[in-house]
Every structure is written in C-alpha cells, then in structure tokens.
Length: 254
Image 1 (cartoon, rainbow, N blue to C red):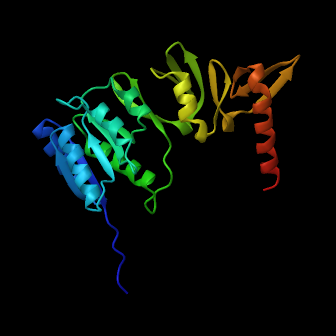
Image 2 (image 1 turned 45 degrees about the vertical axis):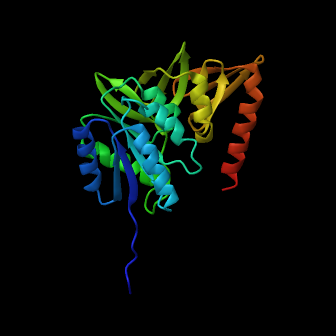
Image 3 (image 1 turned 90 degrees about the horizontal axis):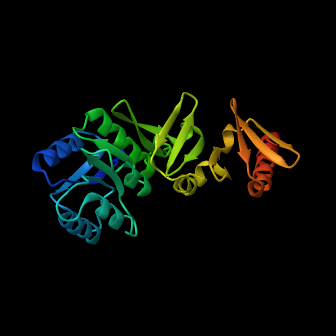
C-alpha cells in the first residue's frame, strides 16, 4: 500500500534586511511542515510573487512579514493581503513591539520578535497549520501579545474570563492575573464574539462560559465570575439571561 503524501505549507518570507531574511528562510526550510519557501526584499516584490503564485495555481499559505520596511511597510502590505479572495495567513516578524495592536486587528496568526527563536517560529507554524485545517491540529484560540517585565507573551482568548475597559485600553482578567493592552473594548467585542464573549456593560466584556451566577434584584443585574461581581446594564440583561437559559437547557438534554 502506498503512503499518503501530504504537501507542506507554501510560505513567503518578506524582509528588507538580507541577513534577517536569510535567517527566517533557513528556519522555515528546516521545519518539516514547510514545503516551499519564497522570499522577497520588499512589499512590492512580495505582491508580485503572490500574484504569480496565484496565476500558477500554487497560492501561498502564509506570509512571514517584517513590519518596518522601505516603501510598502508590513502593516500596509498586511491590509492588502486581507483583501485577497483567499488571503494567506499572516505572521509578523519584527524587532519592534509597538505594532501588536495592528497585528491583532489584522487577525495575524502570531507576532514574533527578532531575533527569532526556533521554538517560537515552530509555535507560529503550528498556529498557521491549525487555522489551515491540517490533520492533527484543532482550531486555535485567538491571542493577544502582552508585555510582562520586558518579555512579550501571548494570552489566549480561552484564558480570559472577562475584560474591563480603561479608557483606550482594556484589562484582560485571567485566573492568574490581569494584563493591560492598548486595544479598545469595542475591538475585542467584535473580534471575540464568536469565541463566546458578550458585552454586558459599556465597560465590561465577559466570557459567558466563565459566568458562575446571575443575580437580578430590584431591576439591577450582576453576574459573578469567580470572586468578582460585574454589573450588567439594563439593555444587556435580557439578552444575557436568555443566553444563559439556552445554555442551561442544552446542558440538561445531554
């Protein structure tokens, strides 16, 4: 019986610095999940390669993209990629931390800081494989880069219990602590709606699965998430109550 041949990812690495481009391309080629590795020194060249790949019937699965480049920078190029009929997955590879919000809004699969460590690149490839639907990889949780003592780590949406607005920032509350990120609550509300998060108040977004109790007293509604009570505005009370009732009914019928 002949074995099944599974094609690897076809990827494009884009960086205007030749040494950095060669380093990323080398690491990509060393990963068994990667098939073809294309390279480009600027955004315009990247677009030409992508157009040619589509015309040849061999579209690129993912683009590993530097941000600060001469001419067409990585953020602008990323926005153009999202307009493709079948957009490639985006992984930003940069020496700068201040574009994490752009990466989040573009739904990038990952945000790697230079110098790229092989294990972090391997994790980014795993995320791309998971979102691509390859065998053996389940759906990947959305992530947000946060800075902890000068080190950037990624907090998955599945770790977040609720989010609290603080001006133009949002504070992500997990079981082990909280993280302040420069992302508006409205952006998170839209991005995480499909992940089970619901806006319950102008300043709070809650992961419905983490709601332990709901209390309505004298027309005022609060939910309890762990040891925290969160107010629910009048306009959101009925929607939240109906949602929790539906979830409870589904649980009873299983």
